[in-house]
Image 1: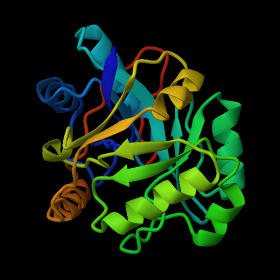
Image 2: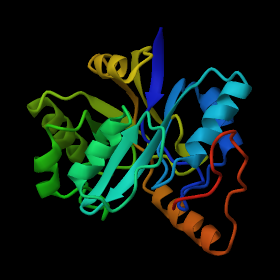
Image 3: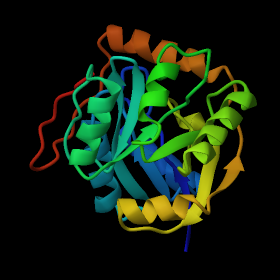
Length: 238
């Protein structure tokens, strides 16, 4: 069975996102997204909420618990996480912390010159062999050459590439997906990624303004209401 997957997205547990958990699930179902990684900024509670909601509602979506972690030199994504990875570690220590959980480490949106959060070129050189994959298509990237450079990097170190919509609003979900074979384990996913096919395209640059609007809402106190997940804390780490 083929999946339509997105390995980089944000719920409103990230303060720059407008997607609440119920909308997350409903939009994925409506747009045919069958696998999604919830990778909130320095937080994983939202991912567990969405994973449980998908399971309880029998939604045909495979949810991967992830986190976009701020390191001392830019961001790294962890997938298949069980616990929060602390922010502000070195890139090397962040990769190690992800691997200690049995997770996969991914470099998101490398080389995008329009973002302040990208991993530095120096850090990329140091961790490119120890990460598990490179994000080779980010729907929020404005210039296609940055994605091509990322895919070239992945090829140069023998790593598969992922696709992420980097969604912060419902309109972005489903705009791009990576068609891959179904998988069960992180190791299976790495194999499936090598046969991935990009479907869809880029988001309109207007979506960046939606993130600004979301941050304003957060500052005004319009923050997510937390639904309890048994066995887990329900506070934000943003």
